[in-house]
Image (cartoon, rainbow, N blue to C red; front, side, top):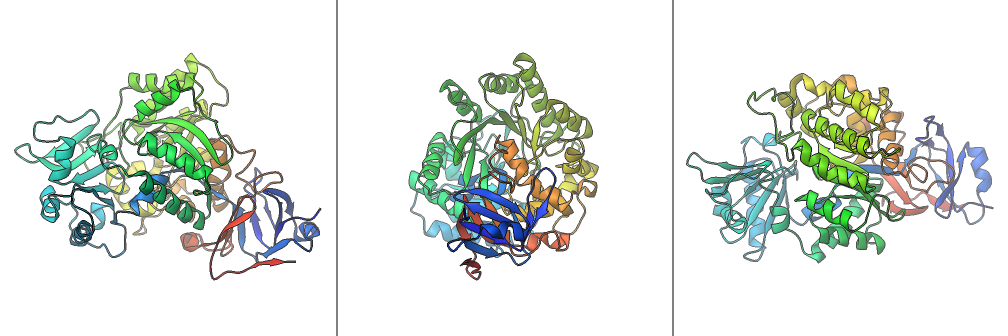
Length: 542
């Protein structure tokens, strides 16, 4: 029996348990049927077999991003992006907002994303008055790149009912001026209601999902773990889009909403749904809540104050008792559980929660997770090992936010997203981008894990560097393991789904500081080419 597709003459990085590197792969239907030397695999070439001459380039398993937000990334493309290279100052940001206002009907939301005050010379947020000057008729919301801090104008404050008499919500801060009037800056839970108030229509959600899926595929991502939606309606639209083929990336849907995640988790539990429901295209993932803030804000909940601010140690969303109750029930009802936890205080709370849940209702192979696991000190790494927890670090953050990490955390950067420690302790960690917080490009995540350099070239915990093969596995087999799917994908092995990526060079041979510059030539999902770089035409019949 001849194969449908054969790829030869390559650097085939299998990401199997032995880190084998081979030369050729054969695919029939949607499965890998052979992996080995050229002469072995070429025997499966028939007259109708499509053949790819890799010409020494790397073939890797389809990349798995274990933590990103497909809807947020996609719908952000409908708004104003502060990450465009033309944005060099606050003046540029305000100018782009004004352009968007002029093309938006009065009363409709104007949404701005990706703002980072540390990347502009003014080194500050825009004021409510500056946004009011652009429009008093359009509600305007500008979200920081981390997604945990927003700035709004007076119209948006009015819609949310926020004024000088509004108390700070639990886990949030309404920033005020010297006389108590809101400045428009909203931190953590104070800005969360806007995920509902400024939500998108069904058509906008679908449009965003489709655009995001196409972008992900072009970067070699074949599977995602979606880390939370804007609303239950968003969750439904995402399922429909995958089922209808409008979203082609395989989706492991974490049960969480950006605002009031605990309510959504409770509703899913009551509906009798739990982790694992679905198929290889769309599957229900873990139940998730937010426990603290962002690593770059910085608002992550720390056991010790920030290095550059001795009066600040972050924000917590829940007490230990509340966290234990919410996720303990989810564990009891069969869910894999997880939580956004960046600071060491929040990570410790989540480990306490998992330990308590397992004591009350023991379960083998639970694979409970911690999203981000930002500052994971050695005692916490050891507890992760003992509890068999899967951390989901974000090594691409080092490039964009590394300089700020050094300022905020000092020596603690040596324990930030500590993948070397995880590997050495036998902990399976799966890599995620947290897009749109930073780029979804998996090669940037691999680059970050291998190099741990900031954009200015500073070392950000260099002792935690890992090898290239280890970093690739972080975004392939480990991601499959984190979703209970390592038996069907995540490595190039016989019998697994033919989700494959052809890079434009040999990743094991390029200087490690150039990994971020590599590109994807082909993306294959289930044996079908779903992305092909226009300038590349290497498919041929034998």
